[in-house]
Figure 1 (cartoon, helix red, strand yellow):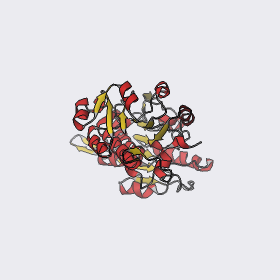
Figure 2 (cartoon, rainbow, N blue to C red):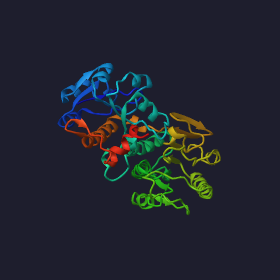
Figure 3 (tube, helix red, strand yellow):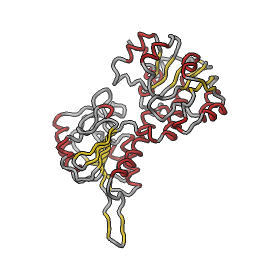
Figure 4 (cartoon, rainbow, N blue to C red):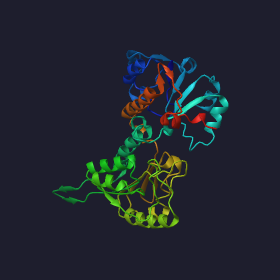
Length: 360
C-alpha cells in the first residue's frame, strides 16, 4: 500500500517527518512525499529520499497514493478529482464543519479525522489535539512576553526592585497547563481558572493558584472538553474573572466547547478594566474566541491592551510540532494498518471514532 504526504497550503508544519519514514516502511508501506512538503519545517526533500521515500509533485502523489495524509484537508476541488479508492487522513473537524461528512460520502471517499480520535488514555499517543495544544500553550506565553512592556520575573537591581508579572490562564486543559508551567518557569505569578474541578490539583502541582467558582456543571463525561454552564454560574464566573483580570498583566484563554462557539470569558467591559500594556492571548479564536474583541489571526491594540488572536501557534514552531504530529500519525497508522492494508475495524473504538464517514 502506498501512502502520500501532502504539502500544507497555509501551514509551516508537515504531517510526516523523515525520521518516521523507516517506521512506516516496517509496516509494509511505500511512502510518497510532495516536493517541498517539509521545507518550512526544516525537513528538506533530500532527507525524505535518504530515509526511503519518493519525492514527487502534488499531482503524482494524489494519483499514485492509496492513502493521502495531510494536517489540513485538501481543497474541495482536489477532493472531487480523487477516485473512490482513496483513503484520507487529516483534521476534517466534522464537529465544526457540519457539511464535510456529507460531501465526502457523496464523493465516495473514506476518511479518518485525527481530531475525532477519542481523548482516552489508550489513544494518548495518537492525540494530535493534545500534542499541538501543548505547543500552543508554551508559545502563547512567549507571544505574550514579546508584547508585554514589563518583565515577567521579579528583578532585584541596583536601581530598584521589579515585581513579577501576574499571569491569568483561563482554561486549564493541555494548552492551559503548559502555559502555566511556562509562565512559572519564566518567573511570573500565575493564577488559573477552569470549570473542571479535576484541574485544580494539576494547576497547583505546577505552582499556579487555582481560582474556585462554586457550582460548575459536571464534566466527567466530557472527554477533556469544557461543558456548557448555567447562566447563574456564568454570571458569577464572569464577575470573578473580571476581578482577577483587572489585576493581571497577561491573560491567556484556551476554553473551547466541542462543536459549539467558544464561550466569551472576557467581554468588552472586562477588557476595559485591564491596565494599559496588558496582553491577552486568545487561543480559541478559530471558534469565535474567548475575548469578545479578539480577531482570528490578528494582533490588535485596544486602548493600550494588546490582543493576540491565534488558534494555530503550533505553526510558529514547525520543526518540533511536525515531529510530534508525525509521531501521532505513525501511532495511529500502526494500529490502523494490518499486513500493509487499512483495517476498517469498527470494534476498535479509536478507529470507529476517527472514521467519521462511515456514519449516516
